[in-house]
Image (cartoon, rainbow, N blue to C red; front, side):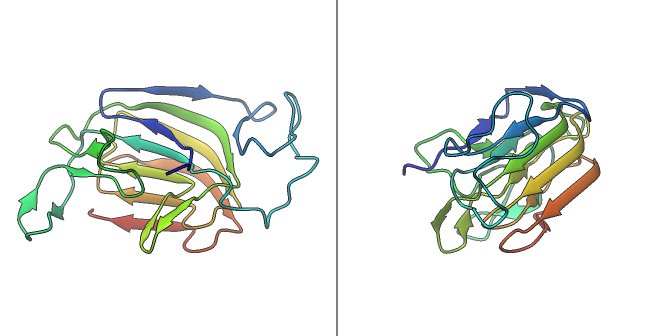
Length: 172
């Protein structure tokens, strides 16, 4: 209940565009890193689960079933309580949820419950109009990156020291 995460909902967009020399770093409040720094002065790659991560939810197609095994075009993303609007999926495979470029996501992956974790970067039904490139995930408690359906492509990804899969897919 107290896990923090950055959630981009289906009608929202993110515009996080860093550069190779000045990446945008998403990290825990416990990290003493300051603007202009690349390396944390107090965190190491074994510190994980200190916040949630980034969740992007789009309107692209998913292949999913609900609890009664009926095919559905949208679902609530794992790791977020149903009291929060965190639906993903639809029928717009060209949907645009924005841009993540030259971004580092560090020390995330809150564990909400068994089989219900937040990944470093979670994408639910994210469309091909979204740009995601030059991404680094460091020290996430669960998966580095997990796709739940969608049609987005990623370029230049580095995932290091995560507790489960570096890359994981579901509902493709």
